[in-house]
Amino acid sequence: MPEPGFYFAAMFISYGFNVALMVTFGVASFFLFDINDFTLMLVMVFVAPVLLAPWNFRISRAIALYTMGGITRD
Image 1 (cartoon, rainbow, N blue to C red):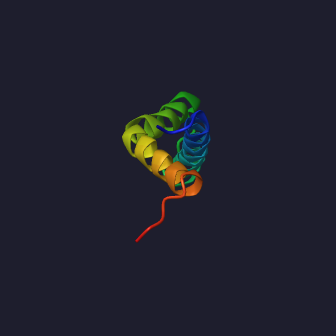
Image 2: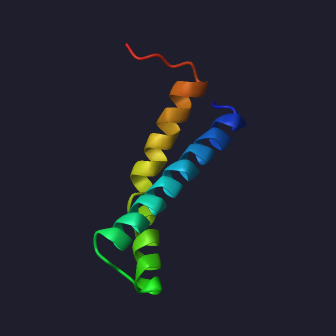
């Protein structure tokens, strides 16, 4: 049974990934696609983390296990 700290760590790792995704898609939509409409940019920024949520959930828990759980790679 994982300790409660594991879930807090996974939550913060997931938060970091979401911030990185939002910044990346925001900058890409502004510079690459030349989107000047604010509402369209918000849609692009918020759709990316929603679509990548399953990946984000799994990878953040795996990173938390490797860093906090003492799991080693064979």
